[in-house]
Amino acid sequence: MHIDHTKNIIEIKNISSSYGDETILNDINLSIHKGDYLGIVGSNGSGKTTLLRTILGLLSFKRGTIKLFGQDISVFKDWSKIGYVPQKVINFDNNFPVTVEEVVMMGRYGKLGLFKRINDKDKQEVYKALEQVEMLPYRNRPIGDLSGGQQQRVFIARALTGNPEIIFLDEPTVGVEKDIKEKFYKLLHDLNEKLKLTIVIVTHDIESMSHEAMHVACIKDHTLIFHESIDDLFKESHGIISRRL
Amino acid sequence: MLDIFQYNFILRGFEAGVIIAFIAPLIGTFLVLRRYSLIADTLSHISLAGVAMAFLFGWNPILTTLGVTTISSVGMERLRNTKHIYGESALALFLSGGLAIATVLLSLGKGFNSNLLNYLFGSIVTVTQNDIYTILILGVIVLILLIIFYKEIVYITFDEESAKVSGLPVRFINTIFIMLVAITVSLAIPIIGILLITALIVIPVVTALQLKKGFLKTIIYAECFSILSVIAGIFVSFYFNLSTGGTIVLLMLGIFLIVILSKRYL
Image 1 (tube, rainbow over the protein chains, first blue to last red):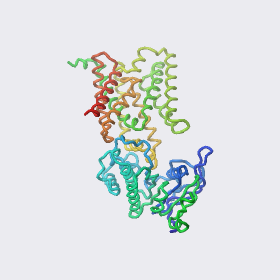
Image 2: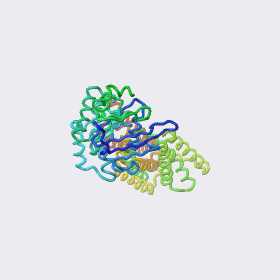
Image 3: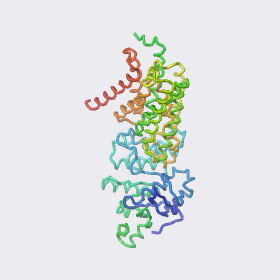
Image 4: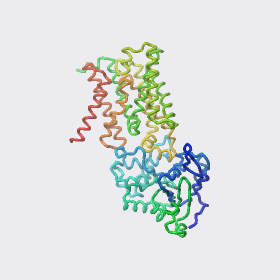
């Protein structure tokens, strides 16, 4: 499968950044096209999460350009086109007093904007997103009462409820059991296939990506060492990913 | 029977107390869940500098405190955002700096007197009719801004990073929020006192969190605990001639204990 660069929605050119004297991203070039299912893989500390956070505007960079939907990131305003499922919600603990519905509703706030109240349409969108991830019956449950896999589905519903064109997931399967992980990847596959949602996963789970993703980008020592389609990779040689790592 | 209401200062105390009891848990819910309880403590210590200034120059203590805490709150938020120093260290700098300025100003103006004790530990005797108007206006401002930015503050409290990615102006809302904390601290001083404000902001929320309800229900329970404690505290302190602030806080701690014990044994 060939990478089609004519429909790029994310374009990263020559991105470099450092923290003090330490390089954390080294001249990264990467493009993500509409409808893609991209796995950004690499070992711990390789720089893959740093790259994700830079694309999302959470970290600044020293050199290079990032274009989101054709616009430079510094002037990009249409963040509702982007959904984000963080690895670990920073303050989230099981005692946080929010229900599943309240969590998913947060995904509408960016689209709603300041000074606007939640209306029936927002509620319908929340229910729709919960249905897509098969969590609608749990909508009134406290989020802390759910299992790790169920919580992950709720966070995906939150990312979906703003009707994004692309979602980024940071290490979504860490600490999730094997059978739940399979169901989780099936859900992502369906979202990519049926809703034509562009999916970008940052993960160290190279094996799963080699089955699930369309393309794989591999980061090693803060440098992108390859970005190819899964088919091309397997044509070259089985197990090439792990060898290059 | 209720000869307590014959006294105008008691009525003023009730009026001010109920407004403060209503506002404090609203702010406290977000502070506790963001692990920012220490910010209220820092601002309350800084507010002593405001009280000392008011003593020295003959200004209105609530308004002077409001100015000092608001400016400091914005400074604290900026310093925390620079990431040059740890968040808690920024709080420690402001807390000790505020206290140092307060002690120097108090010694300059010979302010170490019984009037100071009223502000340190709270006393409804200090509340004037003008204070009631000031507290009411400030309380309404806090309430309106919280209603306007409620959904954004909830999102930032739960997951600040995702709120940023969704395009919400997180830094702006955080600045508004910390200014609301500063206002709440300033309006609570006359009743509860500088040293006990954090208790009013934190304890009812911590108690309500034990009940494990949704976000809005947690706020409602915290409101109930807070208003009940303040009203009962003013009654008890009047009849037993006790410190108002201390009595209110002890009642809040009593409710907290009852909730914890009933959860364990019922």
